[in-house]
Amino acid sequence: MTNRRDFLTSAGLGAVALATPISWSTGVAAQEMLPKRPIPGTSDSLPIVGLGNSRVFAEKDLEASRELIEIFRSRGGSYIDCIYDLRFTAAEAVGSLGAANDIFLGTYCMEEDEADMRANIQRILELSGKEQLDLVHAWPEFAVPNWNTLRKLKDEGLTKYIGISRQNKSHYDAMMKVMETGTVDVVQVNYSALEREADERILPMAIDNGIAVTVNRPFLNGDYFGLVGGHELPAWAADFDCESWAQFSLKYILSHPAVTCAITETSNPEHAIDNIGAGFGAMPDESTRERMVTHLQSL
Image (tube, rainbow, N blue to C red; front, side):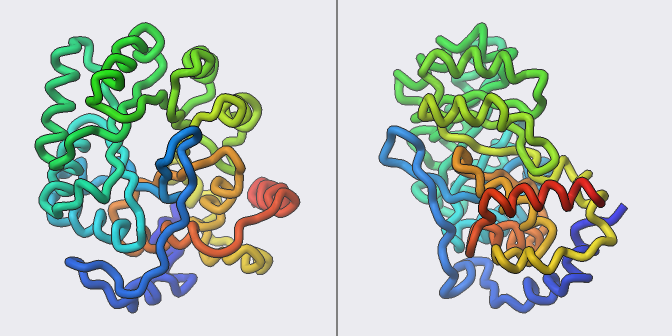
């Protein structure tokens, strides 16, 4: 199966990324900052490309985690979203960088015991140096029966926002049930040119209810690169400032009016720079988006 490194090498992006004058302590000099989009109904906003469950967080590699976070931070990135023990590594990296005020930190709380949930939140706060988590969300199978608990965490100020997340259309009905309450701040859902089901119900409902949307599975957990492997990026991708297959998928996602941020999960600095690049330049219009879907379906 073709992987991301093959793409970067064949497209010349690996050389470009490696040639970028990176200082891991200060980031890249004179970099344009990622555009931001508002969290509806608030004064806050999110950079449009975020960082999720990276392998370096799972491996508890603090040095690599710091470097990865600094790549995003140096380009105006701030949203980090992690689950399980990965959240503690990410929080520790944020804290060791003294970046608590720069990072929008999200996590999942789905512990059966509320005391355990609160203890884990407190641990994240202590590791990161933050006084309040930015986002706590949960899978619908937990959120539906325990939504009042999440609302209590928000009311008490342990988290600023609460949300619901899943990455399979089989959970959409349950997600919408919570969204209907009018108390959801953020919904995270799978969406891409090859997984468009969220556009039928979840994304329109998010717009109607003033809910921010973060998107997972931009590369179908890697299967996307197996599909496009060996194929040249179409020349017309340059019309919307697209330089790689990764950016092709991300720009499709980011061009949807409901989407606030696309979450990427790379652990590779080159890939991170490539992903961030999708946030800059032109975005495809509606006719181009349809062309992108048709092109991918033809491969």
